Amino acid sequence: MTAMTPGSNIPLSAARVTVDVAAPVRLDVSGLLLTADGKVRSDDDFIFYNQPSGPGVTYRSGGGTSPDAITVDTSAVPPGIEKIVVTASPDAAGQTFQGIEPTATIRNADDNSVLATFTPPQLGTETALVIVEVYLRNGAWKARAVGQGYANGLAGIATDFGVTVEEPAAPAAPPQPTMQPPATPP
Image (cartoon, rainbow, N blue to C red):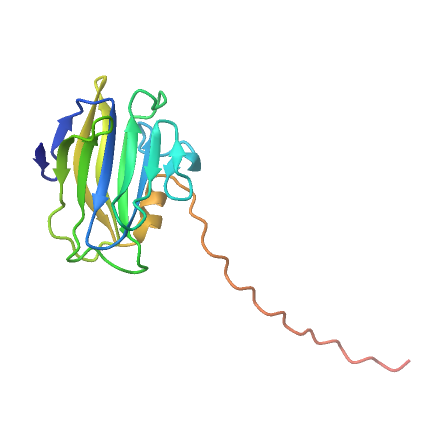
């Protein structure tokens, strides 16, 4: 097993890997399938609890008792996808990662053996994090420890990678009464 540091990478010895992300609080974990330009092809490439599967990538909820996880089957990832980023954000609205640094564990999905772990260094006001990426380089799949934080939550990450984030609708302004000119006598 390898303990990774920010920016370090490892070759993947398994075609199917699971990245689970644990912290002392409940996290929302997701995966984004990215092309060479660093963007999703469509919103279908955003894998999370409401859309738990995509081409070669699946989401598994830990149900609050174990970590949520993203599994990548590199043999099933479609051509043109060069990177799968694994993200995490605290489930509680507005909570930051300060003092609750998560640990990503990269496992062989077939036998559950641990390939590597990564805990980002001390975090602060970040409300979402790109923790690990699984990427294709020169025909070989690798994993990289990232630890890049965002202060604008999962919506900030999703938007950066090209996902359409629907904002809540603004309340409609109440209709303004219109003044009718006084009637003129005939």
